[in-house]
Image 1 (cartoon, helix red, strand yellow):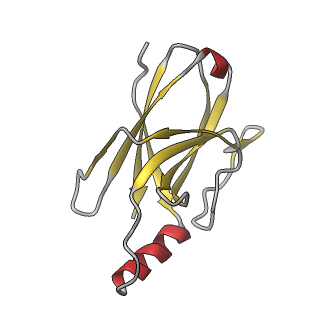
Image 2 (image 1 turned 90 degrees about the horizontal axis):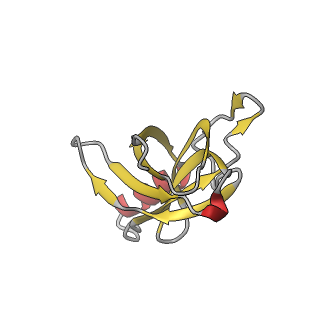
Length: 132
């Protein structure tokens, strides 16, 4: 069963801003965004944790999946897509945070969300739009 795509706006991290500034100043090329990470630490009780730009990792990363698609819906926008295909081993796992990860393992953008419990056999399409 394929669920409705989950669309989430994410905060671009200080790590990525620093990499962008370095690149613009003639430094290293930017690494590609290659994965979307999911974790269970985006909530404490019933309250969402803040998603500050200073985050360097998810609070409680549980898994990473490859980016399935990328697009640029606006001149200053990007949209990245991943498909989380739930296995029997992941049944009952909850995720309440997601992040975009670059090829060097850096956290590019971060988002907390309402907790979602995974059911085996379901496919969750997740779209993250970094907030520039």
